[in-house]
Length: 270
Length: 236
Image 1 (cartoon, one colour):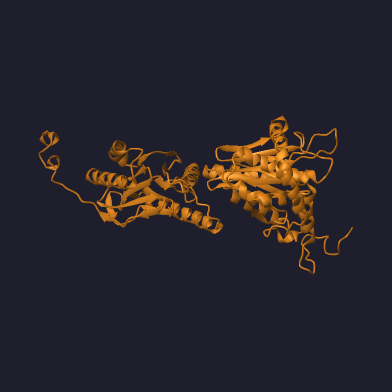
Image 2 (cartoon, helix red, strand yellow):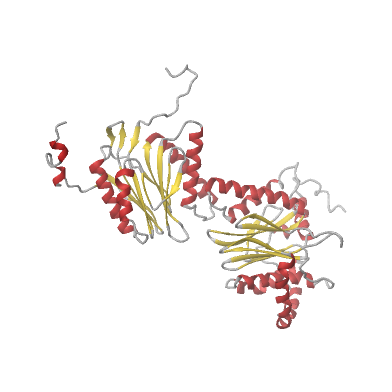
């Protein structure tokens, strides 16, 4: 089970110059079910795949509203995400109390990243085992950020994290340039299409109103979560347009096999 | 007199003060105006002290009231702007945020029974749209936004003139003239004012404060002459 002798302590470097505990935390993100984020010129949409522990249980929440103008989708340890979520809510409230204006999304992303970084440098701590997609709308428009357990954070046009997110990323890489001019409804469909890529690679599963939830925020829209029966119309629309999509999907699958990572990916991820 | 040597005396009365500040919100920005006099009591002591400051590219500030307290506020604001600069993320601070921040500062001081003895006028533009913003905070932390604002004696003399001149589509160029006229009238009527003034304009292009300049004045109005008014003929 041990990878090597340098991975039991968060603050001990390996001779190769790596922090294995931090890298393991990055792996925890990949264990969580997939979440996708896409951005147009006016909106950001998050699409998530919810898992449940058994047939008898409800599904695990993946989307959290932080403030009117901002929310997150999580992949990894949900319990850790709640801690970060509570922190983010407090930060937004404090900012609003002092300045009477909404906290800029980039500032909050930086704040969360700084919080994550602290737990990569103290012997008494462990890194957060969760990755976030932060979607928000502020003075400068819509923003999509990713934050990692390592303390890195990036802004994206589109991004997917979590289990089998690579196939969603492949879809996004092929289509993200079209997203800029899309209306909200079309952007939502694109987000769900990207998410579906992560499901279709495991044969017996499909997106349903039970296991899929989305959220959007943007110009004139506060952060809104759409789930359960409310999401069914989107899934129906998608199914109806499947005929047209089929050819395209075949192409996408071919591409998935020869994918390369985006150049901006975290160095910790290798 | 006021308690023993352990007691601490707060500012209960301002000594070194500036008089009115006036501001007008325009369609494409904001104009602020103030004279450059900082009086010691009724003595016109410091005649070329700026009462307007540029906070950022999008925001200016003017004060009336105690000068030392303003200096304190000024350094607090400069500190805030430096930490904003250090974020290095090109997110401009909105005038509204600066206004509300100052409101918190003023209210906190007031709650310690040690108010910062000022009225502050904040003028700016929204970086995204170029729309004007004009707000006021006073020594109690009271704060509001308005299309036209005047402090001190200006509340009586300049505010009605500003209200009369205001149109929602008034331009900064027009607004600058209105402010200059108001400062002139204030110079005629306010004994704590002088004729050297500064005007600050804030537009999308940036915040600019003029060097102190002298107002052109005329004293040969009929009503300014001795014996021209009823009151001069009265016997008491």
